[in-house]
Length: 189
Image: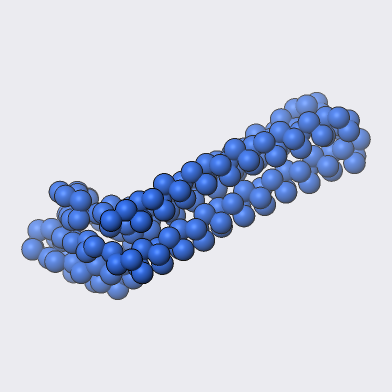
């Protein structure tokens, strides 16, 4: 019984940590590099017939070359709403509407802008690590509560806490790897 409880706590912590890393990777993907990437605009909210909808539900995306993103709306009536949402976003992109597609040209990033994006990426990575630490703290607290209630032995509690700490280190390493990759992408000219 006690091993099952510890196993449940560890599995729950691993699941929450996995989601935190996935969320951090998603956040990092939404930061603009010098190359066109649909992840930058697919979550952009567009007012469509009075309701807000993410752009990925209203259009398809293609990347014909490294600096061009083509947005093709499923409904031509959404063209102006999509164009307006892109202009109002803080991405620094100017949409060009040819009646069928909306083309987004990605200009070369300046050195200062790159550094700003690196700073933003590091902040998002730190937020992800904080989420991992919170999950680790909660799981450790649960294990300590089981030990206090004499449902598990002191040795089992120590082993469970060590396992939780190893999980946290593994997932923190994944966040570190993701931020290093993103930083290299951003600083690449």
